[in-house]
Every structure is written in structure tokens, then in C-alpha cells.
Image (cartoon, rainbow, N blue to C red):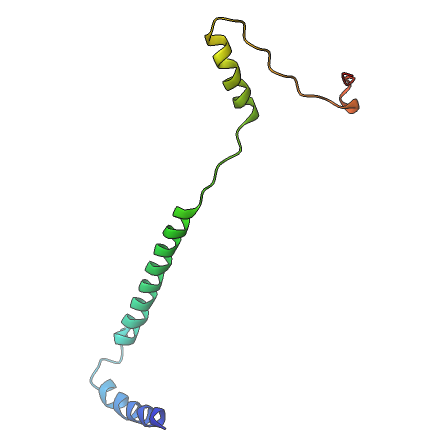
Length: 101
């Protein structure tokens, strides 16, 4: 019942206040500011939450196989011995090379 009273009071007040303003000028007013402020606070909270969640992510990329082979060959060449040959990828029968038995 109080919502109806508020609505009636606002409808009676708005026409009185609207006569004082220039009818060609449109401004957002207090309601526009409140909506904008609420959106700004919401975006700020979402960004803060996103930063907290992104800080918790522990993502490690899978190592590159070629880099792993080079890393394994580097200590052998540093010791003065011949570098170890990198293992060739095994091809199946479709590769044209027979498998070693």
C-alpha cells in the first residue's frame, strides 16, 4: 500500500518540478548518476574478482620436444665428448621404414 502512496506523490511532484526546467534540455539527473555509479561499482568488483582468480591459476605449458632434445644434448657437448644424436621419430609401416625388431 505504501508503494501506491509513493507513486501518487511522485506523479504529483514531477509535473511541478518539470515546469521549472527548459523543455529542450535533457539531462540524466540523479537517477542516471545512480545507475552509472552502480554499474561502475559492479565492474570494479568484477575486475577485482577476476584478478584474484587469475592469480590462482597455475598454468604450465607443455615443453617443446625439440627444445628438450637440445637441452639434453647441450651438457654432453659441453663435456668435450661428441654430441649424442637426437632420437629419430619412429615411423610405423605407413612411414616407409620398417620397425626395428
